[in-house]
Image (cartoon, rainbow, N blue to C red; front, top):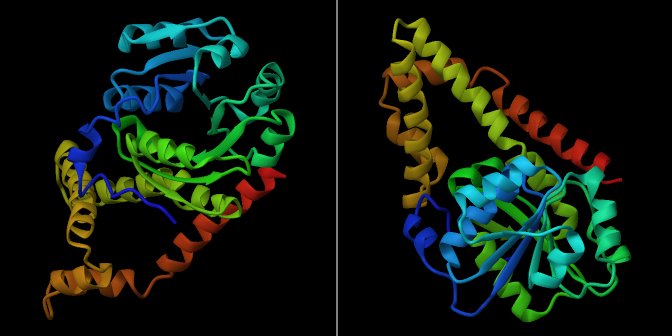
Length: 284
């Protein structure tokens, strides 16, 4: 398994430039939020690479052109494949089939972020393409992505290094077996929504104690950020941090007595498992 360091520990790595000449042109089929976020972070790390994009939505193309001066819009997937060494398939799963049929004979490196679409389906249509399947998540929008990815059968060694650098530009990425991508979907793909609910509950609790809404929000978000950064930067085990904060007969112990007598662990586990099961169902 190959992993990238967490962006919390090495933010400076996100500012590094990619290996010169490693890739000269990158295409995006689909200009939605995830495609745009990946394009923006990749252009920062690979400033010399030409960025090509196609989307049926003119407003999305206008956003690319406005925010990313290096971008060139093209008329369709076929033209994009001809102009790009690497193509991100950043379309919705239900829209991927016509894209694949348009580029059926390409030999390009295809990086698919279409949720639930298996590698064998893409390879079945594009029989000469080298395929990678990625499950990113929405913190990609701020360069703090957590993603899992799997390689197809025709991947070459240079492709592996290129994919690691491209995804590393957007945050943390771990190579896994394709069958584990459903677990990645449940844990980190859907995870931001689950964490947002927890933060929402913290904010509500703060307001219930009389704090101003903005203060409750900022304290809650910073608590999550700071805790994650402390664990990431130090490599500390979560239990060690619990012990560190928990003074005998103190406030933390009083709170933990409520939390740990609940079924919070089972609720969180069940939440993530339900998302993973649904991902598996959609993949079928």
